[in-house]
Image 1 (tube, one colour):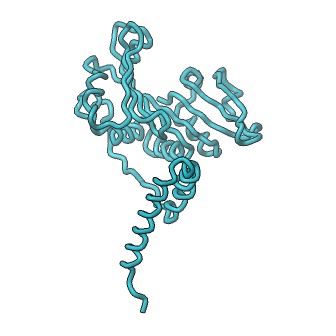
Image 2 (cartoon, rainbow, N blue to C red):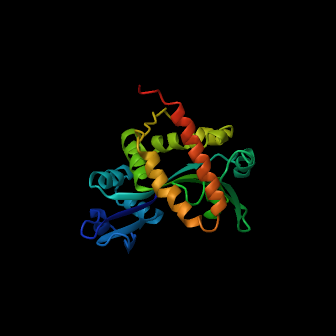
Image 3 (cartoon, rainbow, N blue to C red):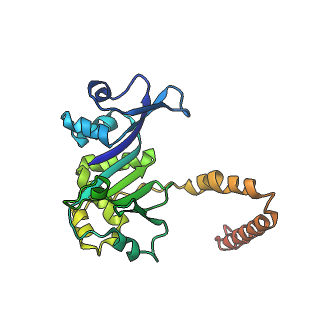
Length: 252
């Protein structure tokens, strides 16, 4: 189910259901874009919309068809398997995962595993939902996908509308968590039909954009504090260019 949404829109074009329901949403002005509003729609607000008859696909369809900008999209899957072991997942890939963090919260022993850097476009949280809700009678382990950036959220929303919300998210999580799927409970939770992954068409000038937006600003920032290192880097680049030009065919 949808668990969190962040959207932006023109001040006079709020989604119709924001005014017609009791869902409480956090609205703040967009400081970067005058005349636009940022709205954070949390789990309680989304549940209110469901209670009032809206389906998750109705929410996504309305947002995508009316060109609302979705900059964060969270989707949660719950497992009731009592054998789910979050610490086992953490230990399973200690030597493989670059950004993996384990937390134990409170006296109840509720554990949370984060996969992905806090600033990354995609982050996954696996945690003991039963402990959070103080439920002792049954197991609830939640796997939560957090997708950021408007471009990636738009792609995920489109896949969810085309293939079904749960199926699309399962497919994304299977790819992201492939090294953890030897855990039977997780494998069963993410089992679903194969959904083809359509990669974006490569941008032929993408390398130049990257150089201008990432490399050059970094060089300008550090050129005075690390002149020798940057000079050595530049000489290596010149050497590479000289070698590559020698490999070019003679036009004569």
